[in-house]
Image (cartoon, rainbow, N blue to C red):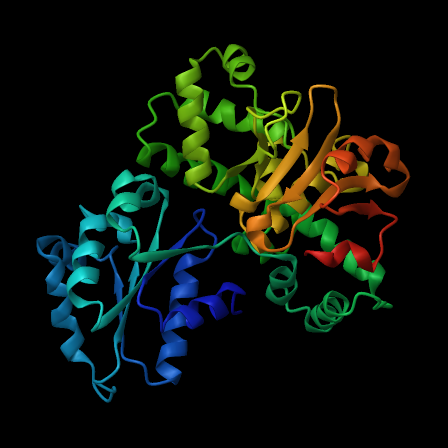
Length: 407
């Protein structure tokens, strides 16, 4: 199954910048790279695939970056006038991946186009940001969207209905009950490809447990975290308060760790693509809260395994928080996290999401689990303060076709 990101990646092949694909472990970065190789092959684009988990290949690339050029001459039947697309999986295994990419870009960007996947260890490296400025474009691979979830489960008819609803605002479907069942499974177990393809709930939970224990532990090791227990406890605390303000002082006291340690954990969890922090929106009014961000997890399956709670969204006390988390994640997918803000004042006035003018489509969203929870008078202060920003309501209940507006 082709991921939605593939179209953007193929469009970027003609661009001068190198392409960097980042995301949480097990989101399917290697699979996307293989799909890109097939795309190039069908169009007779010269392509070389390099997996740096191969120790011999890694040795050659570490010996000198220009050794990669030796592999370009092995191509047969390709158009030599075209750039060679070099697909590099696990680029973070190089001793100095930033210098490797910088040298190849500066000297050979007219001959090769590199598309590389990298884990958090590479992305956390400050040299990656500094030395590759203007030389790369980053593409974020999230866990699967709901549309990808349906395709991965081979629900072609339901996927067609889903597309029809998304493309036609007034569209109705006779399959709304079936779509609700699937959507609740998606919320319950999240969008990791390996979890989606498991057949039973028991196996899905076991797979999520493995992701939590094995791959999060690798993130901890690569980030050189000394106190694994406190890091994991931080992750669990954040999972329990999605949509809430991150009070560093309060959480630090609760966990018995220093503020600087917690701040580092927050940074690493963001760079590992497990959490995202939404910043407050403000025009510098004194009574607006402008310091503390709100925290969200980027996969609800990971949230649920951390909390050991796999009840459906309708059976949970935190249903509103889960629904808000789902909307945030999809807004990030559409507009990027840098463009998704919230608004809150010291008097308790708040709006869940504001899309920045930089995204080209400014509006605000208030997420409510049930429509009856909406009280328009609560948002009078916001509308007086920001009359130019339209406010929309996004409700889960009563469940209808409108739920799928961003999913």
